[in-house]
Image 1 (cartoon, rainbow, N blue to C red):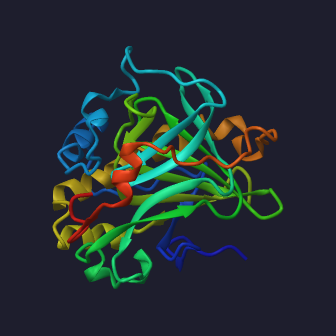
Image 2: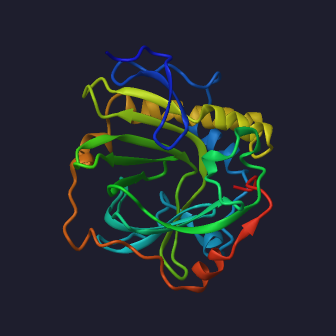
Image 3: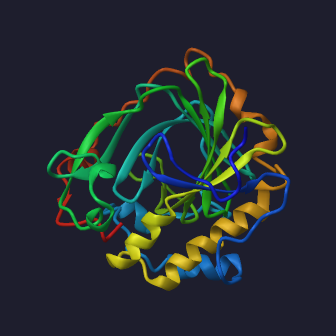
Length: 290
């Protein structure tokens, strides 16, 4: 039996989720106000960046005519503020960038300095704790990730252990910028709130809102203003109307069943560059900067 709309649960990663609707049944607004997409993005661009890389200052929006393009099979870095992930390009065209993260690929991510997982820190302390960088590898099945050109989100296609589709994760984030520098990189900043689309009941999949409570916590702890948090909710509404309800691109291209060849599926390592060596040593007193 399907859970009723409004039900709450805990995701596999430990975040709180709320069932907000079913795809193709319309979209119930998450934000309490309406706002043009570019206005919401402009509010969120004021959020502090945490890249600390000269290449970020020279990076251009993916929608810019001068933005660099990447070739299939190329290894690049996908960067969310302090997070740095090694990924491999599947395709790059005017619609957007599509990448594959093979199992075992390397990543750097900040975590609580005392060794706890981010999710293990109580919500009211989560962004106030000292942090250090840790190197990890991508576990479980590989993931196709799509960054639609000019949009403030990416779309992740997750798989179960048997390779069948598990669902689609819509990660709300700042519009992507591209740079070259030591290593070709895609830059963005995570915006806390996310959307999960179950793989079951094709055409009427359950749609869940993830980490609404964490978004409220970052306002209390000073990372976002209340106005910026509302702008994040506005982005979620735009994603719903832009492609989720209608199953538009990239949901209509069957990325959930894309299969890499042996060469594409080789784990991607972080490059041995001064940038990466410096990033490994980073730490800070709290996570309010990004």
